[in-house]
Length: 117
Image (cartoon, rainbow, N blue to C red; front, top):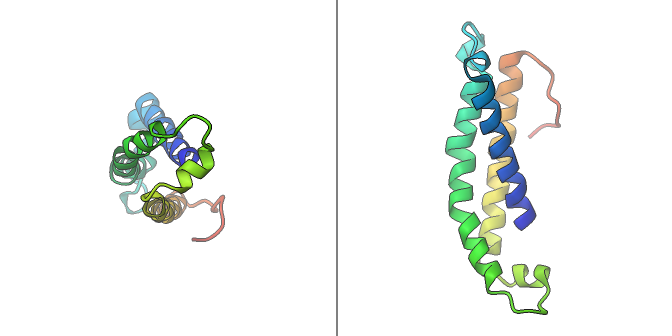
């Protein structure tokens, strides 16, 4: 789960950096349905990624800090009573991200780079 959260954080940080760097250029006027990369990216960062990371990063870090020396990292993580809830929320987040990607493909009138939802 640590790898999953790190991957999600990387997406968050990369998207935030792109928005900072290119700002208004990512929200051209006249796009089909008014959908833009910037609009989808801001929605993704603020309503999908940030809530997940804010909730689970500190909770998992606290559990990881309780691991005893010599205990397997993987076995310790699997023993966490919240791990199944976290896995379910990560799976839900993945589904939302795929939906947002499909919206972006439609708005940009490009072929999807990944398979269907």
